[in-house]
Image (cartoon, rainbow, N blue to C red):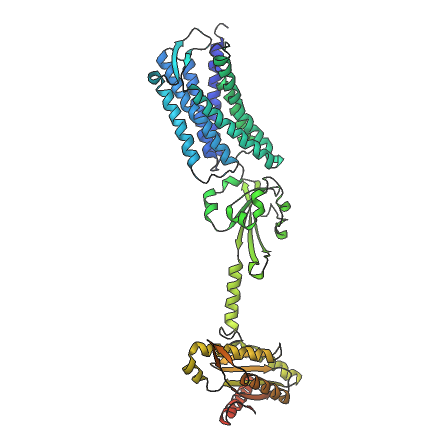
Length: 521
């Protein structure tokens, strides 16, 4: 067993670390479809280079080979910590408004790499170093550190500590079901940090003898193992990031992700504007516990792949009342249900548009009375009722006198205002269930159900007097008009066309008799 030396064990251990790192890297690339894996993969590449550099150093046989190993190691070392910080920020859903932090981190990492790679000329990293194969571990032995040594170490330390702080804050906010993953992430960051600090303190500050052994690569084996547990056993990249985060920020609809237990995981900005409480709602908490969460969405079926639910959000005024449609779909990984995605669309404008289209089909756009087509449909039904019951009904048909003069004198906009004015007056006089319509041009028609001729005449006189004794104001001008009204009674088996024809004849009789009067046929 003479070959089983400390140096051999270290080489074997580093080789195992390399294999584990490559394995985890392949798993992350192959199995994880989340965009959040990007920083993680880059961090694993940096870790792989760090361990590879150590392996190259301890298996070297010359100063040049050992120095090359150190340079490879520092490619990973310089970028490993900042990449891990960016991964943690992304995983913990801390969105950076600008790319300044990315630029600063990579600029410092690149600068430290240049310092290491030129240390044999600048002596900024190491003032003096020698190659030895006589100690426990073959490689470079640093005789004296350069002025940038502790800066490089401090930068990595700052990134790792910042990562731990971010994870700790999320542990407080997120539900306990997610905390175990966060604890593993914290331990993953702490293991190499503690090892590196111990190595620095022991070798350079306390001047204790570690026989040239840097224990940081061995701590990274533990880190890799913890990452393996997170990725394969605890679904580090959960279902929510499988959606395209860039697309979520581009679409106009609200998007929420809930896990299979109906706990909140994430949402886009639109959803957070619809439900402001989401901004401070902890990840992993039951979504039904969120204030103002619609009751219709409180009992979603996670097993139902397609659900369509309409709900309302009331505002302080009627104008702020909104109607939404929620499209609910389950997210699966094979046969396993990971959770659901809720796509929320504001359909208020669509509903209002449909109402406007419906109103346009039934009403006159100027006066907001029924149009002639819908009036004919309604009175056809009323006439059938009149025939069955034998109770008389009446029709009033009236026309504004000399309306052309109004248009010629004041303009067509003034004429439109007069028509709206007359329509309003008539609506104020007739009963709520009487049918009033604009018959065409300046003609109006009223159907009076269950009303005899005598009462209808009296009502027609009230309409005529109300129009005659009032005036329409348009641009500080008082415009007076009168009307001629024809009245006829509908009873028995008389048809709609016959009644309207008699009402039209009565109206023309009123005009021929001097206008501004009521005539009956």
